[in-house]
Image 1 (cartoon, rainbow, N blue to C red):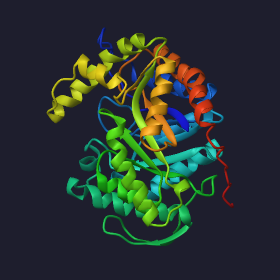
Image 2: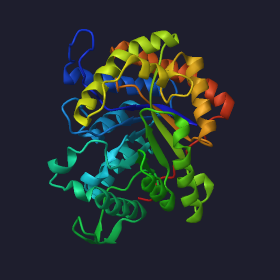
Image 3: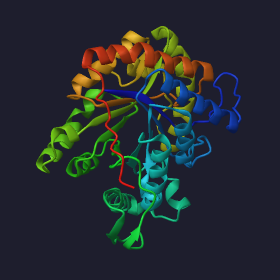
Length: 356
């Protein structure tokens, strides 16, 4: 199992003092967090994409390129790239460039986004939400297969054999599909034989088993071998010295962030009892001390029939930078070894360099 971190580069006020960090300081801290994750042996670090005032990740490839130059072994990915609102040619070029800088450590997780601001920002219609994604994913997959693409669609001008450069360091740039809870999205990823990244921000892991089964069944019907049908989890998580310390540190920032989002979406204000339930044995929060977090990761792996990757979303709450780096270190040095001893190490990624 790969184990890592996802960050949305949130710039939220401290829930106690109300102080908002300077944007430059927040990004400097984020790059240091990626370096810490690399040094302590984590497998992957992802950067999200949002076009809202409380996030600094509107241009995630810039952050990933900076991280690529400062790290050695950790894989670097989006979490997610809002492909519906992007040009697949530019997406491919950006990640191919990151892959060259990182010498084969770049990946893409594509999705439609959990917020809608990107669509009007880039002159797109929300009613085209799904058709934009399906068409652009088709083009992105063709771009990684060949340099000179013949392609036409409804939402973008045709390609008639133009060369798309640079080519990545890896022969095949990994592309995952990021999904929420829509069955059709799970089926689409399975039919394409693409690895699946499931965003779980609440509820219980076991509720997603029927959807994961849909994905695997669709992939099997399409003739894809089981080893191609990887399942990853993106979940809210934080590792403290003790479980109580972890919950007390994370709750105020989580409550603030989800109260803000909830007001936009008509949700009831989140409560401490809801938070405690999601931190409990059946809930989907990976928050606690190292032994309890490791045990919960292993339980999630069992209930979903095998998981290839789990990434922790720690930036859903505002935390002091020192608390964040300590949590990352605990994940890498205390949690990951337990999970790896139980399940076996993650397979070594063989990097096949693309022909020049």
